[in-house]
Image (cartoon, rainbow, N blue to C red; front, side, top):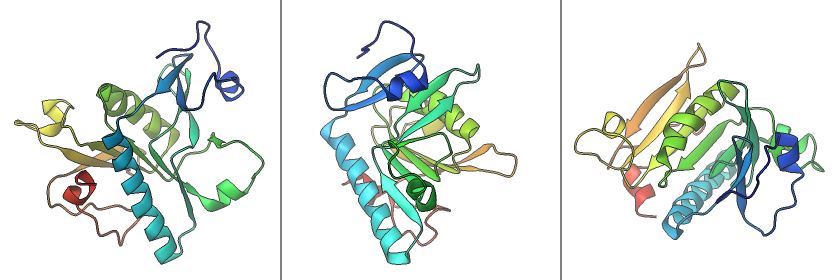
Length: 200
């Protein structure tokens, strides 16, 4: 659902007086409300909780949140305001300005997007924007197998993609399905399978 009729900048977006609580993104100058199914929220909560356990268990210097807004740029230089379903940010970066709103111009360590009907946003637009920003690790959780056959195979299978920036700052995809253990550079000791995520 679009809320604005005029084109907004990222700064406008951060200062916008939203009519009600919720999650919003700035897309092509317009504010869009993000509405998720309960299953979508269950998956995001499960992944965030799993990451928090790893952060605490290994005493990692990360902050896990589902409310972080990041400024990204399209290929044409247009500002976007994205809110990943789960974000991992360096705790030093988080603590550097505790009075600031949860909006970052700097790259996250890890972003997770749970797919919904607008799957092309995550596979195409956000993939490009997150790579351009320099987010080191990006997960696409396609639990409905609604992406293209080029990505999911034929027949299409529910898949978790983990994109990792290489030395040329280009994402390299890794696809995980079923009982596959998910490999994450951010959480090298993570003991999590795709099936465990999808049954959350």
